[in-house]
Amino acid sequence: MRLLVVGGSGFLGREVCRQAVRAGWSVVGTYHSGAIGVPGVAARRLDVTDRAAVRALVAEVRPDAVVGTPYRYGDWAVTADGAAHVGYAAAEAGVRLVHISSDALHAGRPEPYGDDEPPTPVFPYGAAKAAAETAVRALDPGAALVRTSLIVGEGSKQIQLCHDALAGRASLFTDELRCPVDVTDLAAAVLELVGTDYAGPLNVAGPDPVSRAELGLLVAAASGIDPASMKTSTGAAAGVLRPTDVRLDSSRAAGLLRTRLRGVRELLAG
Ligand SMILES: NC(=O)c1ccc[n+]([C@@H]2O[C@H](COP(=O)([O-])OP(=O)(O)OC[C@H]3O[C@@H](n4cnc5c(N)ncnc54)[C@H](OP(=O)(O)O)[C@@H]3O)[C@@H](O)[C@H]2O)c1
Image 1 (cartoon, protein in one colour):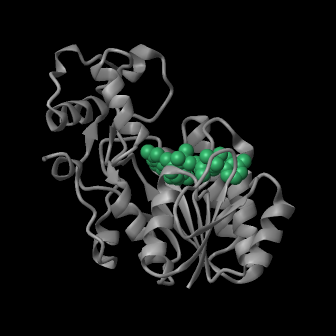
Image 2: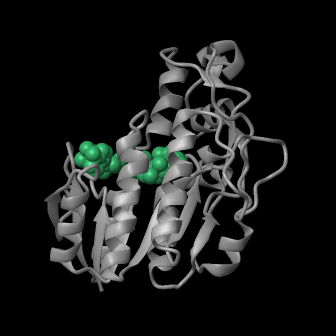
């Protein structure tokens, strides 16, 4: 299996690269301003906003499958147009595509979201991720669209935010609920999906919905930190326009995949 990981220098992309190398796959990973640093991965620089460059790389690498992870918060050209370019190039080459999407494309509500619900974005990042999905589906109807939530694990920026809040340097919202997933579980699920013909959106997140503040308390307990000085707030009070309650129902993925998607309470229990 020859795999091209677009965004191989990202948090998820690096773990996808690591696990694919471990599985004996031939792996090409792309970076833009960072570095991949995973032994066994052939690193190539790529700017996904350059459609011709994306097409040329896919044509040159001739992968059996592409995993598309890149995004940049607040940058439509990377998050939306870049995903479209990857979708176009994969469809043109006739290769399997697993595109990484997000729970951020939902508006938020108390009931969990099923896999096939249409996007209802309420802020620019969510709109860019929704546009990315729409473009990828139109260009490559066979692509899998992995809707995921806060990605946690060693080196996670979500966990770093919790440590920052515990040190009083940041604030965690009590009204923003998500279903965190471990980066190793997510990467394994993505690689399993590469080997299937699953098409369309699939929720791939953990089973435990928690607020960011609850996540902070779990991190404090796991790290032996006194949470007394943890700063909390609400999105509304902070004037942040983001969906509040977004729970992904990942039961379809749990039935489809061998990979067990562990909940954050289990992940941080030790
Ligand atoms: N992190 C989360 O909690 C979370 C939650 C839900 C969904 N997601 C989704 O999961 C995916 C992976 O997230 P992540 O946390 O692993 O992201 P990340 O660590 O921020 O990595 C982003 C990747 O995009 C690449 N990139 C940025 N601009 C680029 C450009 N112009 N051309 C090519 N590549 C470019 C970066 O390359 P360089 O670093 O080399 O510049 C990096 O490889 C994203 O699609 C995101 O929307 C993430």
